[in-house]
Image (spheres, rainbow, N blue to C red):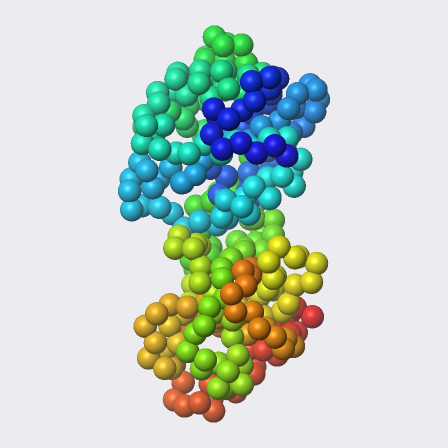
Length: 310
C-alpha cells in the first residue's frame, strides 16, 4: 500500500481512482464495509483504491480541547486499512487552514486535482467542507460537474444498531469490551510503553507491566480485565494477562493506571512498546481491608483469566 502525507504528495502520474474519505477511527465493521466496497469497485473497474483520512482528529482543530478518545492510533489505523486491500492511504494534516476549505474547494483540490477520482464511496451521513456544509447530495452534484460518480456504501447494522466510533467509545468507556469487540470485529486494543511503577505488584507476588498510554487513548472503565498482551508488532505469540485499570484504591492511589500481570512470564518488559487486546471484563475496582484479601482476589482474577483465554 502506498502512503502519502498530504494530498499534495500524491504522485503526478497517479491515475484515476476510487476514493473513500473519513476519520475511520477504530476501522470498525461499518468502516470495513465502506472501505471494502471501495476496494471492490476499484478492482471491478481496474482503478486504484484510495482511503483519505485525517491527522489530528478534526474535532481537536474545530473545537480545541474536545478531542474524542482515540480507538486506533495512526500507525495501527494504517495497518488495519492496509489489510483491507487498499492500494493507497492519504493522511491529510487537518490544520485550521484546511478546515476552512469550502465543500467545492475540498472536492476540487483533493478529489479532482490530486486523486483524479472516478468514483467516490461514502456512507449516507458523510459531511465535508467548512462547517461540514457539504452532504451526499452536494457531493453528487459536484461529481456531475467534475466527472466522477458518487456511490453510497451499505450500512452495517445488527439488531437495529448502526456501528459507529461514538458507540464503540461509549462501550469502552463503560468497560463493555465484549460489545466493543463485536462492533470492531476484533478486541479493542490499547498500546503503550512499559514504565516503572510503584513495584507494589512485585511485592505482592504479581509483578505488573505498567503502560504509559497516549494522552487521548480510549482506556476502558476502571476494573479488572482478561486481555492478551502483544510485544511490539509480533502478533504470533500473544501472552495472557490480567489487567487492572484504575487508581489502586486499596492503597489510596490517585493516578489512574493500566497495569498488566502477564501469566507464566518471567522477563523484563521495561521500555518495550506493548499492546493489550481486551477480551473480557472480570470485575469492578474494589477497596480491600488488607493485603491478604487483595492477594486472594488477584489469584482468583488470574485463574479466571487463564480459564477464559486458555
